Image (cartoon, rainbow, N blue to C red):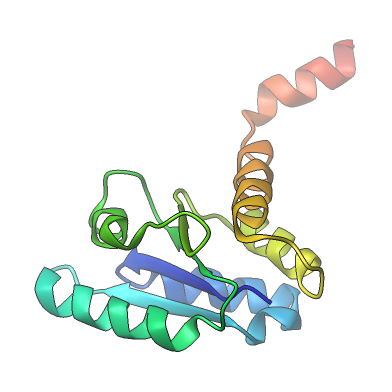
Length: 138
């Protein structure tokens, strides 16, 4: 099972993972959150992240889910990006974590897991009025 780390500024990582765990208890295992203070010491945070990644990796790699591309959490994770070892998906949202729960117990390679979560997250983003309008008219 590929471990997943949700990484964000503020309480987002803890909150979104906590919400996802209410939906799917399978996320209690091999899934963790790391929050960054707003006045983050990037050197200390990078050292903490390095240690967490080492501890989490059981040989299949680790997936990091961050809040947004270009943000501090993603920038902190980028030096650890390594194909088939550490993968990063930005824009973490609840549907991504719910999809993660449904994939637990399956032998899915790291890159495929990352791609499937990114797809689930993107598919969940809708401008509701346009989506519903198309359904009524279509």
